[in-house]
Image (cartoon, rainbow, N blue to C red):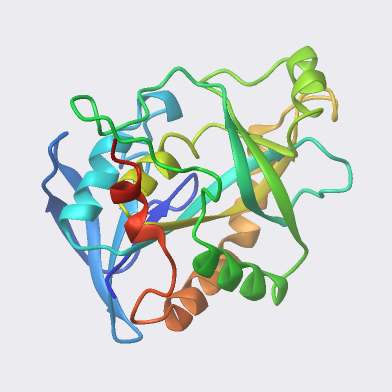
Length: 247
């Protein structure tokens, strides 16, 4: 199985050969290497110059991995907690999401394909991520609310959002939807890097950097163990989702 890894803030490169992948939406810079007998393709989500979340070419990233033969994607994200019980520095594995962005979220402009999002994340990849993350710290599960960015949320917005979700971030969607449309297994491991607006005096970017630098090696270890444990042949229904969505 060829595995894709999409790195978020603080995860810009992995050791490997730098390559340029082709996609129908533009070229994508990636790193190619082998690990545990698996072919790995790592894409820094934001690119080398760290494009803001709303400007990321999500379509190119997912299409490039699809064309390169990736069957599973492990995504790395950073999020803000909207629950005091979900501490900064702990891990969050989303089981659902709410998309409040205005981003284009489909590959299918000319064909009626309605992918089922009842289970948006691959259950096999999620299970392994949860098990491995539990060995490295506290793990939470729940709903990820996606905002457009690049600005951070207001206190009033967070007070509303926390009624419906557990964490807030800017990068999960449309990435998860596009992976689903492409029939690629996809799950995310998130690092809670801060509390959301109104839950602390102010948002300190330097503190966020400190948190993900402290936890970076743990995240990479979790991803490494996930690579090792993923089954060679897929045991889920993710690859069949696009076909089942055809009208």
